[in-house]
Image 1 (cartoon, helix red, strand yellow):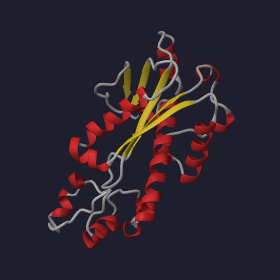
Image 2 (cartoon, rainbow, N blue to C red):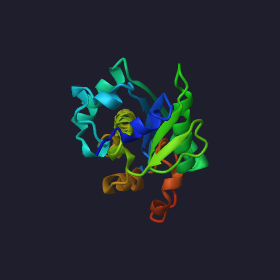
Image 3 (cartoon, one colour):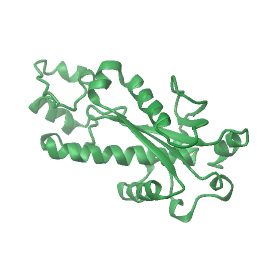
Image 4 (spheres, rainbow, N blue to C red):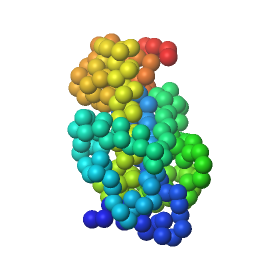
Length: 218
């Protein structure tokens, strides 16, 4: 499969610059949702990726070490443009996770300097209110290199945030599970109660086991 098929098809129609977009953190019980948008040099669509990106793939298929190496290259290469945006847990509770995810994605597009983004390749379903045309691709992080790059940047960036939160709240184990609903995380919430970065709206099932949560203020 040509994983630059969509990039070549859409830029051939005159849409350039084009970015790939993905998010990380829709499902966790704690922490922000993070979106990333990535623009590759157009010449790569025909010539292929540089050697340093030969292992580029869906972030979920890669080890943490490999993701970090790819992240370091993607975010330091002078020919790659990228933007990252995040929406915190309090706003997620206020507007729901879908709207929060779409907000983060919209913000990545508007944050680009220079030439205005003309088209976005989206992993999954369409994003409401995106300020440019878009093509939504189910499992896009396995079909498009630019979406895969965005998935890696969003994942590594968010994981680093959760590692820092682990230092502030070591009792929850954020560095291990990154806020996802592992058994250890659920038990920690029941034992200690939620902290400032937990998503209240995501804790309904846990509340059936313990209804007297007291949330710490951020």
